[in-house]
Image (cartoon, rainbow, N blue to C red):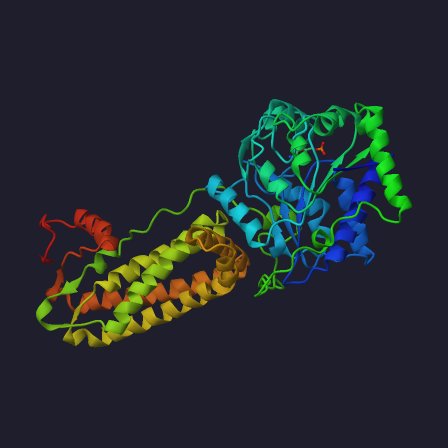
Length: 520
Ligand SMILES: N[C@@H]1[C@@H](O)[C@H](O)[C@@H](COP(=O)(O)O)O[C@@H]1O
């Protein structure tokens, strides 16, 4: 444990800012090997951000190859709310430096599935090779991030109910109105923080002096979650004089003397070189995140969060059984139908699987932005259309329509594959990290989130899908029109279409219950 004592909050803040700058410089981050920085909110780190911004503006440091993970976020207030941690971060830091927007990770307190959001956050941290330096503050009750008293010291990113003391403390940001303070939050866990290669904490003010005492002079205790830092190999707490008021004089003297001796030997609080430079990735380097030179994405800093970060916390689109499902089960009498070519049939199956995977991935990304939801709806439509195609057989005279259908499906497949391949660029690294398929999949969700976070990319992909889906449906309708007298329905017993079949049967009059060979 290193305890650095400075005269006042300003001196403590500039010490930490300089320390972070030095760490990033020693690390020498690259696109392939970025420095991963954990970040807090609260009033305590504001001075640190000011110093970092000033250093960036004077050309002393670049955040070009820095990836950030924020500690926590309130649940239930919009991201553009003036007191959301999204807004805080852009206001105090991200909007003023060159952190790449796609390198910024903040928990989404409006995610439709909050638990999935937390799981993905942990996976994303792992996928970036872990956090090199986690900067944090504490609450007056010694909580770190939103790990309130009583939090498990083995906890990971999760949903947390806020303690009354925290609600009270944070009410100053909400016009002192307790009712307005969110009661729940998403937060990294104590264990998430402890797994960072280095943890740096700022504590200032007399109102936090008891917490400091509990955390460094007494034992590890879940009632003062910062005390868990005693178990970390490289923790550093930087405080002002006021924060030391409850410490024993000998504790203060001890830590001051350590710093003085170190300085007399010509070094400050030094770290093992591997920690300073971070473990370089073995084998294949981590793929850099996609360039984001175009218009701001939903994570981009400017023009402020109000427009760019608006993402209603609404439900996912309802699953796709549409009016045109009826067409899906139009199948012509066996004796003289045209077979969809085997190759194309295989493509339909592969297409359905691919679209299903992408839908699952997008849903699990927890991104509730309108673009994402619209894209999922469009993919649902496409999947429904592909399911229809899979089971389609037509008469000889319908061959031209079948050809048109195959062509539309092929285009569609190409577009979908292109999108997926883009997202899969990162797959080798993820596989290397953990061979378990579940993890790979989770990693992929995050990658998809990154790869598609550009609004216009999502919009373009969605528009293309819409065009292809419409072509398929038009071709299908043509087949139906030209073959009405001969069109039959047969039941498809595969599980993928069973529910569609059930829906269809409910919607059609005079259909026999056995569901086979139905004639219109
Ligand atoms: N979740 C945040 C913590 O991460 C932060 O450390 C604490 C202290 O904030 P302040 O620095 O304003 O005292 O506030 C909130 O509870």
